[in-house]
Image 1 (tube, protein in one colour):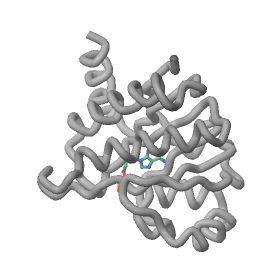
Image 2: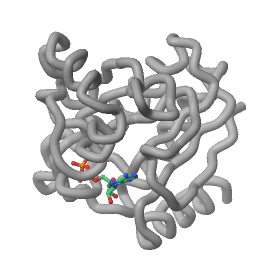
Image 3: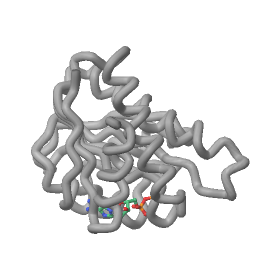
Image 4: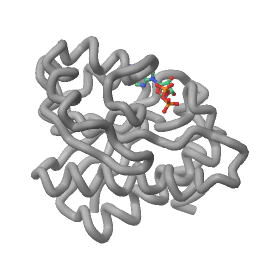
Length: 172
Ligand code: ADP
């Protein structure tokens, strides 16, 4: 069973088999963690993303990591929060499940996730944290059993606290 760790840091520095990019549906780069990943990976990343012709919300696509310490980048567009009645919860769970499964089928044993959708996509943090951890635990226990380590890389203290609280509640 995979170990889940919640850490504070910059995911572009993560030395894992795969990092997950909270992308947009164009897969052509953007702001936030997406921009940081493209800057750190170098222009080769955009060059291989272009022929992928985008990605639907909740789905995932994989590329090499190029200049990143990580071998792969798994790109997944999380849902934009529109009040909670537009399948946002299901779509966020899909992003985590599909990303973890895609990494596992590509032989990854260690993976790092950012807090998908809780930046400019405005998904409520506490709800997002619970969905993320619940989905990752369930997926790691069933279809992605070869994954050994899952890191949630939080960019600020408030985000880290939310994931720690959610993990404590799930383990209780
Ligand atoms: P989304 O569009 O899915 O909301 P954002 O990139 O706006 O994506 O934000 C998602 C989360 O990623 C936010 O918590 C943001 O602070 C965080 N973030 C931004 N840059 C980095 C980084 N270099 N490493 C890890 N997390 C980051």
